[in-house]
Length: 452
Image (tube, rainbow, N blue to C red; front, side):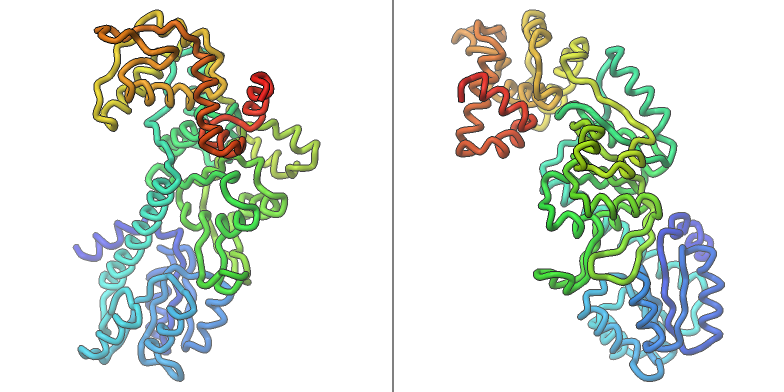
């Protein structure tokens, strides 16, 4: 029963690689036969001296390590590994266990402890515990990262217009495939929402969804962020670090603003997509990664290729399947649906009641150009919920029991809001554009029109 339970949990173990270090050929043979059909890769060594070059060439998720080895002991090597920054789990084995040995193993950083002779079920269950910890650590890393970047997660694509129905149909058709997807459209049209929908409808739904905004990370750090680095790879690299490709294994990596990726990183990304292997900065070893890549951009990549700012081979590799998200001005029939969706979502989080939606308010919204697209509409709904009235002009009359449509214009509100954000950013148009969710080009165009 115990063995059946352990074996049943190994469906995703093909992502993981294991190094067995034991000086007994019989133990090596037993573990390699048992694990080779379950794990992506299993290698064996008879001593620490034999294991070191293997670990230099390949990255192992788990080391099953005997304590009593010729030369350097298992516990001594485990101390070295932790000092060098090895972050994988290590399961120690011994035939001569006592309390002091167990304490030394825990202090050295062992994840588990097996007393020889042991059964296959005990080995599998120890591995299961290690791999579960690894999976949870990856998920927690992704969640912390999303929280730190204030990523908004909307539970699905919202829209009933003809344009959005076509988009939804296309997303449904391509979601089950393993192919790379390119999402295009203006800023704020919901490309990350579409990427999350693709992930949820795919066979990777149980794996992590890892988003990264390529424009938000400096060109000097983007390769380290994507592919990781080893200790000492560059000034400030004080320990090994896994990249986002590693954390996205078995799931989806979403590369937003892909056009901002430096050319050197584009070359490494192309190789990672084609070969499903990455090499951390400063490392001589490659890591196998099973990741689906979804990229997004608000730029015309053909123009970027022509200007030699984007690699043509990467462009054609990403463009296998392309989905274009329409701007909000081309889908005015969806505005009422989106407003109600955002009110339902935000009123709960803000702890305020939803607002009534007057037909005249909707008509004013439908006539507006929405340069910030769905993101701008969401911001307006959030601001209106806090104020207690739809902020599409001047305030309603004091004492009015209805949410009034004001005499001002959405354009006036937009100008007042943009100028306020620009002032808060000390005139930094790039930072103001980022906070508003609009492109720098749109910011420049509006400021020029206002004589700023």
